[in-house]
Length: 465
Image (cartoon, rainbow, N blue to C red; front, top):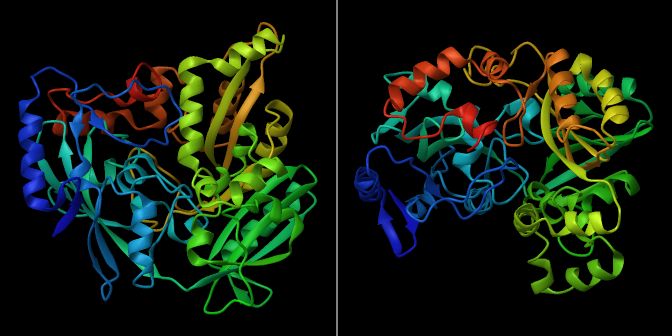
């Protein structure tokens, strides 16, 4: 098995041995970090030091077994690369997170979700086995059963604090060339919530099977569910990779058709709707960018992410806002899972307390009711709905700089929901470990990172990384 490396195609086994040797050469007591070209984390993090562990040899698809519908993939491979390889075989991963530069290893250790999650759960639920470089410098293979089953079930939501995945074997499912979309409108949250439950139970709408479900909330009186169905043929296809803006089409069209690839990446050109903060949704700017190949290459989530990272380092916009006499703003970038029967209550409270629009909705059900994912436990009998909201909110005089984020954490807790850790978190340490299974985490840490070479989960996600 081989992976694509910077200097050509290298044998996977040889790449592992080289990595172990480099790990062993890092002085004892020095914290180990990996060097990654991309990141989709929104919490504060230091840049990787110059001596960070080079894992570029694990960026590439190792093997696809079309008959068995499985893929062996280097864990640093982006989903963009992975999907291009699997679609060539008429297959896709069971869950494809919405942004192109999310890596497979990142989605497994840090969770992921998309419109197939109402039937397939999260990306880690379709992992068959994975090779993990643990904190003690060993490479172990974790499977649902066997010697390292504890690591297999404890790896999701560990964010690289137990080890780094090097190779992941995942299940694939059959794809079709096109996706038929139907955008169904709702005028109130109660009707919307009832429809989500009915659709996830039946998997059919107006006589057509449903493969994908997600939704958008534009206001308390305007929301939509988008129902996607695989299709062999399409009467036409829309293009939202240039001048068109996908989320605006939801409000304007009842029906649409996309190629399979464009459906999977429909959110990436505008980073859902966050591109508006950079002015690229203005008609003249969009026309300029969207009509040229060079311009289209700038309509990508990783480009916007680099702009956000620049602002967070240099605070240029914040300085301009102060000069203009505008109040400071709080970043509120969160994805939370809310039980369906509490969703309307959460949405109503969020609209009042954290005025952000639009909101993304994505139903989620644990795929295997018998599985226990130790660090991110969900009730397998409950249908959850992920609510994603990503923006800034003005702070009133005297407000805590984390006022709105703290409100979200408290409300999610009150409603029996769960909160992803890819973004900022403000829990005190005792509550954090209650929510994220401190006893099991500590046992895993003792077994796989006894020397403490990797960061602690609380320190990485709440304290200093």
